Image 1: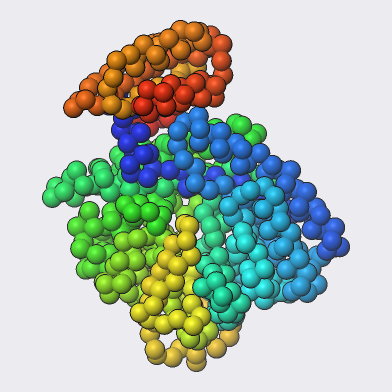
Image 2: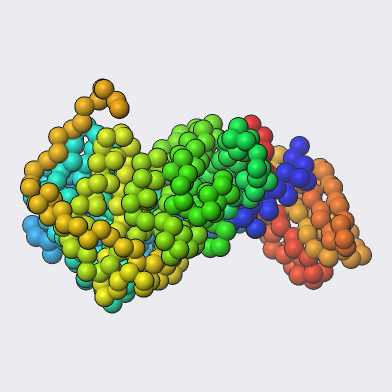
Length: 454
Length: 90
């Protein structure tokens, strides 16, 4: 039988170390909603989402109460809208209509985010894909809960550089259209390589076409728990360090597995995966940078950070894999700058630069995430940064992404604040050197060779 | 069996266990295990109880425990046992 020590340990993790389940996300297949009439399509989508997900929020709250574990967000991910709208949407305005419908459904249900305003264009863009992408700035400026993502590359297909170039413009335009709110639109827009189809985390969640009609995916959290566990093995060797990370990751993930199974049972929707990611929040102590500090680097970004992150990410997976029957999504350690109090400090100190973050993304999920850059950064430079990040994902057969926020009207030395889970970020300097001749070439970067690994 | 873990944390005073146990007895909830420590005047108790014969629902139990907690100035929580089983048993 469970003993008092174990009960106290679990409850201390929850009350003092910010252990929570970050999100229960329901993936919804919208393909059956397709119609050639835009109004009919919007009606079908609204009906489907509000029917399938009607009990998501109350069920999440019930589970929170029964087990005493906070479930921070309840979210919905959808079939990429570029596919769903391909028959009905004949203009960018039509896609914006769909975006407004999704936002209305999210509001009616009381969920925190709705994702899937997405296009998968790693090989090429259809007319519909292009229209959706072009509509993103307007869609994100007119909605509150909507999240958007575009997959521009994969290890099998290479990188669609036309899409990369276009996304530089789209990120900038989205920032401009939401300039009065600190360019927040760009914080809800992710550019991916090798995007997973079962990711519960925003802004990049969508429900892939290989998924079923509805599925429950759960994202766990727990950097605070990890940091406390590691503070007890200060000065010990790597074996002890790694064993501690594995055991802690196991415990954190078990909570996610329990919540996922309960939600699946209550909502009568199949359980998909648990995403093992260590996801920080801006709350003090709930920080991946603090975990890196416990491992032994003064600030995130100091020499040794990439190695520390590599071992952290790998051990989290090793510990988490056994804790859940199905693991998927992004599964790693997130390093968003604005959402992590000690990442912000490291960036302000000058310890953490975009270039170092880029190196770090080659060993962890997911990418250059929630990074505020000067508002006058050119679209070509944004495309160049995206291309670099996509190349890391393509060559290393992993998911990488960018969520860059050119904060209009602000420059290096200033900062921007969004509140909530999105946090606050100092504007980080970007290389002044030009890459327009590179990103303007047009076409695709071919898929990489899969042998001769060096 | 529907097992629930009840924890009571707070400043020690006379009759904490009596109050909680009276409620459990009145509502047909059986106590399977109970342990308690007091360090520096700080009271920490854990009970494992069975709700299979309970006359009230789990959420009603939570509400009633909450009331008692407020009355005597301690924190009382009731959580389904699975969260502890999942985390601490392979």
